[in-house]
Amino acid sequence: MYSQLIPALSRRFFLKSSAAIFVGSVASGYLLRGANAVEYKEFRLRAGVNPVRLVPEPNDMTNAWCFNGQIPGPEIRVQQGDRIRVIVDNALDEETTVHWHGMRVPNAMDGVSHLTQTPIAPGNTFTYEFDAVDAGTFWYHPHQRSFEQVGRGLYGPLIVEEKKPIRVDRDITWVLDDWRLAADGQISDDFGNLHDMSHNGRVGNTVTINGQVLEKFQVRRGERIRLRLINAANARIFGIDFGEHEPVIVAIDGQPVAPHKPKNDLLVLGPAMRVDVVIDMVGDINQQYTLTDSFYRELKYRLVDLVYTNTPLRDRIPDWDMQLPANPLSEPDLGNAERHDVTFSGGMMGGMVMQEMGGSAGHELMGAMGSMMGMMHSGKIWFINGIAAEGPIMEPMLTLSHGRSHVIMMTNATAWHHPIHFHGHSFRVLSRNGTPTRFKEWQDTVLMGPKERVEIAFVADNPGDWMFHCHILEHQAAGMMGVIRVTEPGERT
Ligand code: C2O
Ligand code: CU
Image (cartoon, rainbow, N blue to C red; front, top):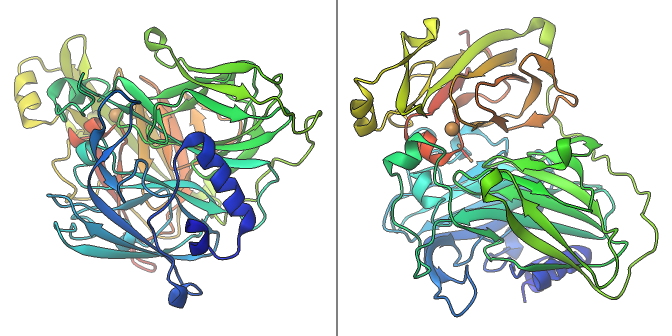
């Protein structure tokens, strides 16, 4: 049915429908209006409450909050250079927005409630328009009470195809999420509780791939698959072990990277991160191979089985090129960059909330036992340069001059992991704990380990007030966010 909505792209249809057979998620329910098709690719998203089948029968359906009645929301798929228009209807009982995570959009289209737009009231509509500047794997989600709205299922994939994609047999998207389900199959209501906020966030008990507990994924011997992984979980970090298979990373957060194997054979994705891998199906016909998620050692579990059909596709590994064409990002000039320091602190450590004392300068850490209860009750548990955010309207923590190169040295002074996300830009990850990274990866979300120091660099080329926050959504809600201002062209800081 939806093939009629997509203009003459039989190959794309073939890829999408074959994905659907195995994965069970069909992008449907959005419209492409003929009249505007040349100028804009138009889509319609409706945020509402719907029963969905997350867990198999005989369990009940789960009442989720979702886009167009499905989890994940429909895959928005366009080509690099396309203009996109998305009309968002809010059928929830509360305000919402949509943020296009990783897309370098104009500030007013960034979907951050109160900071870049008035939130969409229940029953209202907002139209987003922006260009697909970069090709790659992106996603969308509300930026209003995200810890609950995303946690209840409001998110979807946004794929921007390269004009000349690398050659593969199938192009598959897996949106990963985890849920905290009660015995009746319903989403546990304990959003934003103090324990989740002050520890590692809301880690659930049920992991889904494209909105389903997926048992098997069918493949053919000799097949080459491009697998686009998107971590849409509030807090869970995935560490996927592909066992006998050897994934090759070709893009991180939508941005191409020199093709390489994951470190220690573990593909790690912090919340909001995306990784595109190319996998050659080197197993034997009629066999099955288990992918495990072993990020949290005690919580290791089987993610899914790759099940080989009895019909091989080819008998040798293809030698097709895996290098994706670069996106039009400005290269930071490290010799002439402005340098900034950012320190993250807070959270529980040895039974106390670690509070940063003395503001942005001293970075003196003290366990402030006395004020612990106070901080917990005020919901201020995490700090950036000594400040815990109370909402998205705030004074910028940094003001960056437009067009200049900037290096930020980030210090994680906490005992926890944090995926740090910056809006409106991609940045190069230059070093970790003083050691240069191998690939100077372009990312929009970088996972910092406990006590880790990470150095990032970018050109501030997108003017406006941009969110800079931890993407563990409970940490964000408990203070771990700030605003970075990029001045208008010509404006002095
Ligand atoms: Cu994925 Cu500030 O968001
Ligand atoms: Cu965090």
